Length: 291
Image 1 (cartoon, rainbow, N blue to C red):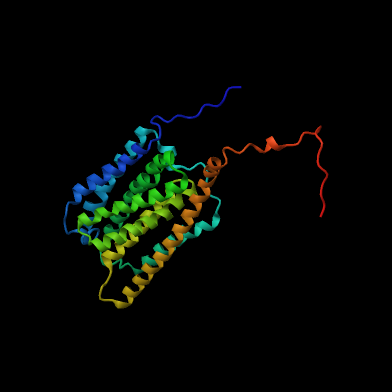
Image 2: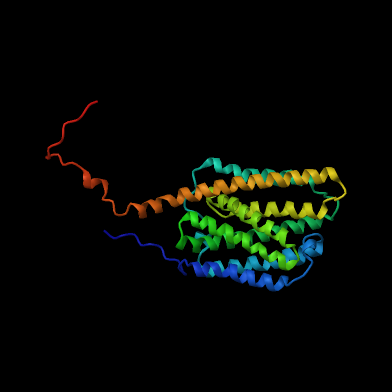
């Protein structure tokens, strides 16, 4: 009987190939950022949104799409054949959506022209598409080639967090940058979870974009002279860290559960199969013992 052929991708999955887009992105970002002091103004004006988000992130997203097309990795980079069955883990991405919705009324929609928010929406969609395709798409393909799923979860989250060290070159303070690294790595766990729960990359892209939209819009329109609003913003921020902690736990549990069969196969590979201990019908059996 002819065995079904294993599908071969145009370019075989490889960790080195998967890391290449992230390395190139980091190098270009470091060159573009160059030590400067304009990070606090990122996304604060229409010009900044176009210059710092829409154009560069749009170009990066298109370039990465062309790379994925050339590699032939669209399916394996964007779709998981099996979803996790741990339905309670939906709580983590659901609470992220709740936080994003809670932040919207805190945005001063009259502080900036309407086309600012339209351009910001386009910009964050480019950011979400590019970074998720890179970190939760192409990178996962390469990591899964070398690591069990638990290792894939850890390394992908850590590398996603470390990418935000580049903000220091753009003028962000070192302390604030380190907080962003931890925050991004934690958020990466919830985004990973979104892929595992939905079975594709669309949910992480939308979560990422929705989160960035609220963060940037709130920062651009926040009234620093309104203590009541600042208290609300601070409360939402503290709640965010709690939700991200839940995302770490949920993402880790899902990855550990998926990686377990592979570890068990390695651990018990020298144990004879259960059929080796089956008793033949013609062999004498010991009498049953009752207690």
